[in-house]
Amino acid sequence: MRYYVQYNGDMRQRYNAKPGDRVFRPLRARPWQVSFPIILRMKDGGHPSPMVLIYGFAITIAVGTILLMLPISSKTGQLTSPVNALFTATSAVCVTGLVVVDTGTYWSPFGQGVLLALFQIGGFGFMTGATILFLAIRRRIGLRDRLLIRESLGMPEVGGVVRIVKRAAMFTLLVEGVGAIILYLRFLAVGTSAGIALWRATFHAVSAFNNCGLDILGNFRSLLYYQGDSTVLLTIAVLIILGGIGYVVVNDVLAKRSLSRLSTDSKIVLVTTISLLVFGTIFILLAEFSNSATLGVLSFPQKLLVSFFQAVTPRTAGFTAIDISKVIGPSLFFIMFLMFVGGASGSTAGGVKVNTLGVLISAALSSIRGREHPGAFGREFSPRSVYRALALVVVYLGLVGAVVLVLSTTEKFGFVDLLFETFSAFGTVGLSTGITPGLSITGRLIITLAMFVGRLGPLTFVSVLAERQQPIKYRYPRDIVRIG
Image (cartoon, rainbow, N blue to C red; front, side, top):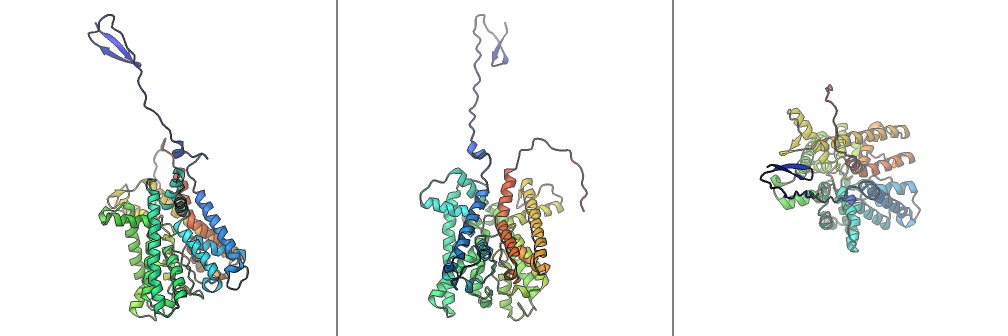
């Protein structure tokens, strides 16, 4: 006799059953379903908002503006105009380096100390600095804080962010300290008094590592006084490079100690950075070799040194060893390109980042080679990464074009000068052809906004794209669009 036994709606055959046998219908246990709304959706109904970072930078700028307006901040003991104080505070917090008043001759030691604190906070990042403060007072770092720290550092995962922030803080202080010691000894050797040498060394070391470019040497001349000093220029250049690639990449290099074992992100950062440095040095050397106003009067070793330095500083520190207003057109255009690219994601640098450039170049090379899936170093990129990189570049260039269009109607300077100034502001570089002090109040406010957007815009834009990412429920039919 054949019977059928039902198990929760499932009819299964059972052979050799006897009359009177019981038929059991056990309930099928369902696995627990545990939801984590704090991870997927915060109390306010969304992902951790990058607006927290924007508010943090805005508050820091506001405090810096108030402090710089005080009579104690200027050497003359007079109140500084709100527009000039706002412009300078924004330039410091956004680690840009553009100035409307000379930092070395206008601001008092107190004012210069305020600037140092502002670009140290701005360079290291609001959230990472806040994390250090929370750790110092032994406050627990919650998941929301960790997610925000991850966004500010450009990290793919949440795990270990606090540990990385601790190490990044120690790394920052160590590098800045070593740089300050080298500069201090060099300034002493050239006849500077001990107190002034110590303050100059500390200020410029912190400014260089944070890719700010503010200097206190006076008369808007930046490092032209040390044009032939290899110790000063190379120390500043190394500080800029280390700050521009970021601690995450440095930590990866120290941990793996092999190029083949590095993450794809670190490989892209290092290869792109080295390529830009080498190509930039060669280009500037050849373009300015015979220009008597820049490199023409220097010896060949000095030309090579200054060319390398000028290939480093546009990404994205505003130090300069030549008069930018005297460079020829091709060099000016190439420097704009370097300011546009900037440094690495999660670093103290600005720009669209070398990571973005590396992804787009790899995608272009893959397309040229006929490969359907772009990638580099034996790894494929997700289409999402390529789309975000492309969207970031398009939006960035659109904002630059809009600002230049507005400035061309409010300022009396030429188009190239305004374009250079805009790229410098959005790239948080600080290089200028000399037009910054001559900007109108409207122009200064526009450049102030450009510096703020340039510092937080790429991070905010990518974060918004990540928040708007939705699973694909359906796809449209494919069609052909003519290209070229």
